[in-house]
Length: 398
Ligand code: HGY
Ligand code: MN
Ligand code: MN
Image 1 (spheres, rainbow, N blue to C red):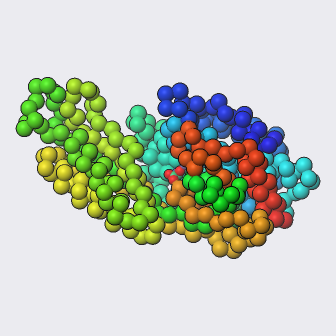
Image 2 (cartoon, rainbow, N blue to C red):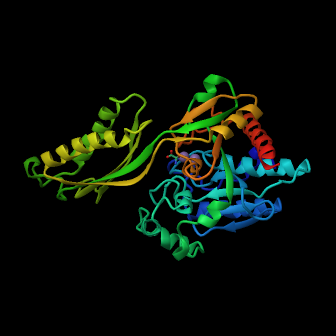
Image 3 (cartoon, protein in one colour):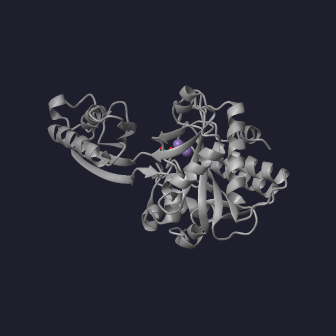
């Protein structure tokens, strides 16, 4: 079972013919198929698989226990996402376990491969939902009530998938078992292309959050309503999209995006009654909220000028994260001092880093593109990543 061979096994699961790439979201049918595939593959390795109260999968190599070495990532994607973001960390973990088993290695400490639920927040809107629930960094009641675009709640979807949702929420016993967490992930940028290395060690994750802007006006007829009589929420929404770029430009290294904008009712000949847009804002350091404040001021002014109302809701936020210094140093030594890379992408490892020592390995992505079908990793680099993961896991699991 090579990592690239395992990737090949799931290459057709959740292909999105309309968007391109993959759409695999928490508890939907493609993600269910991926879960089934993971359980089968893990059990073939003699791992004991369980689903925790929050929908995260845990494949134990030997008995669960304290100070466990845990590795893994996620299987869900963004809408129209790439093939590697998430699955690469999962297949590399399975391939690493098999490679260690083949050489007769047995871990000297509890060891698990984990698949976190809803890392992208692609269905219920909050990223790293599974690891946030595990660590208690999201209120369980709020999580249960999160709705997907069709209005289905996380609780309904999770219950349909067989979870006892009343138990969803912080799991201190399980979290307390983790001694270290190590996540391998495809690089989501060009760092490794320019450095000529197949693998890197992660050092930081920049602060990031998501805010929902809801503009309300008056729905009306596109032909029968004179401009002077309109209260059109699309106007302040459009101004806000421009303000996002304008204000982000004032900060070095800021990233701010509106990738999702939903008019209601959404008819070609209809002035929208409401427009919702989501801001994804990320600035290294502590000034993300300040940037969002500036954007919100511009949005409020534009709403007022059009006679619309505006409600702004923070849906998620994570501070800057620096991965465990000692673990980073060991990874670097063991792997022959590969580059260390920061990232603007969020990860479950960054959520867990607030509770246990965490580290990340990145695998070169020759396109530097992610969250799009062009995301890529060469077979040689995929295998180099899996070998590097096996090497460091063996040293950590002794
Ligand atoms: O949004 C992110 O950075 C991650 O891919 N969830
Ligand atoms: Mn992602
Ligand atoms: Mn990811």
